[in-house]
Amino acid sequence: MTLPDAPSSPAGADRTFQVDLRGLVDLLSHHLYSSPRVYLRELLQNAVDALTARHALEPAAPAGAFGIRLYADGSAVRVEDDGVGLTEADVHSFLATIGRSSKRAEQITEQRGDFIGQFGIGLLSCFLVADEIHVVSRSARTPDAPAVEWRGRGDGSYTIRTLRSSARPRPGTTVTLTPRADAGEWTRPTQVRALARHFGSLLRHPVTFDDGSGGPGAAVNPEPAPWARTYPTPGARSRTLAAYGEDVFGFTPLDTIELDLPAVGLKGIACVLPQAVPAGRRHGHRVHVKGMLLSEQADEILPEWAFFVRCVVDAESLRPTASRESLYEDDTLAAVRDALAERLRAWIARAAASDPDLLARFLHVHHLAVKSLAVHDDEILRMLLPWLPFETTDGHTTLDEFARTHRTVLVTSSVEEFRQVAAIALAAGLGVVNGGYTYDRELVHRLPEIRPQTSVADLDPATLTAHLDPVDRETELAAAAYLARAREALAVFDCDVALRTFQPASAPALLVDSREARHERTRSQLAREQEGGLWGDILGALRQEAPRAQLILNQLNPLVRTAVAIDEPELARTSAEALYGQAALLSRRPLRAAESSLINRSFLDLLAHALRKDH
Image (cartoon, rainbow, N blue to C red; front, side, top):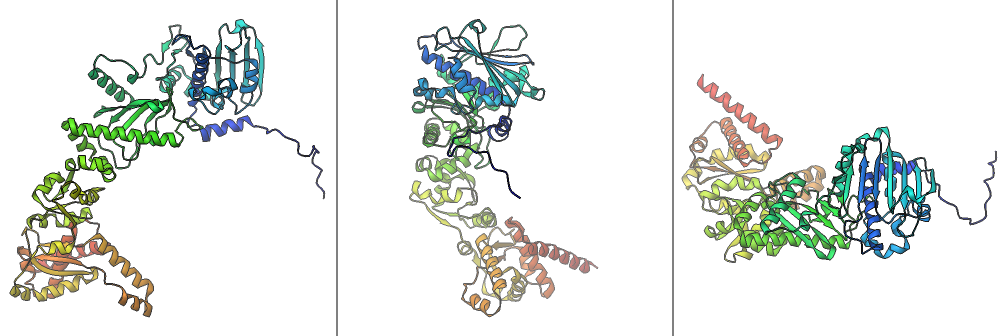
């Protein structure tokens, strides 16, 4: 069997890619653009770029002389601009060639930074809602230029013809779409107007909308951006910016921070959220580029620690990605992010220096965000550490206040450790801070940088037990038998048992055990089980003994005094298990399965013993 010969062609001859336009549109709709609604943004963007080129061609034209008009009546969507327009050669070059853009024309290359678009495929987005695009354009560059009509269809075919000048008396371009039946969601008059306001509310060129009802067209962007207006007083400006933030984001800002970076032409506001948000949760910010909305979820504009604000900004020099729905990560964006971070730091500094009431409200809501910043920012640390609230044995207070009564500050490594020792430490006069929350332990250890006379140390079991009073020798000997049975009963939990006296007397027992010690015991046990045999015995002998938990019984507690006098072995064992279970519950740490089983068993055994005694 032989294969037929392939058609011959000259060696090295160039060939042209054949583009399946329907496949390309499907690619755009599923992988480049987030929604079909972007078709209107692309049409507005093309119109804005055409107006920018017209102003460059006629710089003496008054502001507002050229504009954009939208029309939608349910049967058609039309976008008309007074921009630079296209010649017949432009139409052949740019509309009939996928991937090229009129903005790449040599005569405007030097003005590239004035244009929003960068990729020249925006017009194809119209095929997401229509099967045919109708363009009529007349160039402002060529005197007496005729009008040119281009019709492109979703199957990849198109036609071009020259029209009389009367077909379009003035320079500019009109794009008309006849929506498909399944595109009504995006092409209804109310939706077109809403999309126009959504994408174009901050555009610098006048944009109007006509729904075909016969009335005058409604302005889409009747006023400049709120930060670009003039106000009679600073208070009026602040109130207007706050109202704008509330209208955009749906909440009343705790405060509004003006943002202004002249180097990149960025202006806008940051609205301080009135409620706390989870640490690290990054809200999307509204970013406009040259007035056109780029993204509502541009979290890359601010650093991660700034999750207490939401921003709306308009910039000149930020670079959009190919989909024009997010920002391109480059040196400019990194510099903008750093500069905006500095503006937020400056706002915190001003509040600390001149508005303590605002600072107190801010810290009450967003202390976690400030703590995350203070860990890495020495200036914020020195400025705000005395103001930040912490959970301590004296209640919720600031470190500055806490350090006034405790020259030595002890800090726990976990929340459960703090809860285990808080009551006993308070009774013993120890100053302990809960370091188990995010950033708290790191910040407490930096307290001596602010108050050199204060020392900070991690709380360990030895520090706590050293402040518990031993019982006298006679009491220790009388309780020896009970303590031996208790140690035997709790050996399965690697737990020792000791008898001490401490306040408060209402606490029968204290379980001293750290998370690290539990992990080390678990790791050692698994290693022994996996190694086994002689080699496991040798490694076990060489391995340092894992730290044990310690159940400290309080001789001042009446229940403990009764328990240590029990002679019956089984009842003594059950009571020790019950005391361990109660101390484990009070520690509020997660219980292991064996501990949950012990608590249930000891309760039932004690209940059975009580019932037998009553009968």
